[in-house]
Length: 131
Image (tube, rainbow, N blue to C red; front, side, top):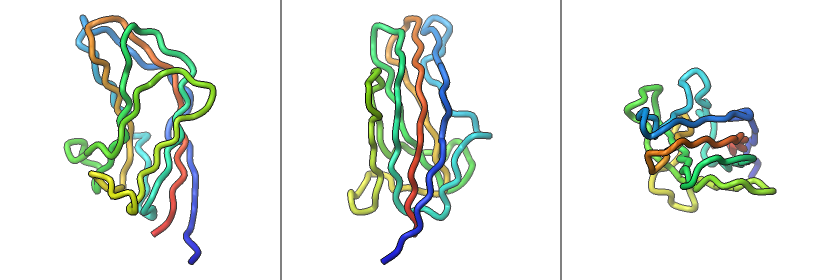
């Protein structure tokens, strides 16, 4: 069986952050850069974290939705963001029986748990496997 495979840069290097005092505890990928995975059934996400400036850990969630409606996105998987020499690999495959399977659109969302100044620098590549 030959399944089509493609890869893309879901997010180029970026630094995001905020301050709990200013109310910025969640940062969501802008809608103009959401990834269309309509032809994909399974995906593997490669998260590279190069820097983190915060006392606590930020959590990145990979979210998916069948439409571009922001309220429809649901978390497929999550990862605590800490700097590492190698990428964090996160599989979302039908055979792994995820709580939410991959739909058409994918995006990232970062949540920070405390009211403190925080930032994290990262990038994400995604390898998608066809239906």
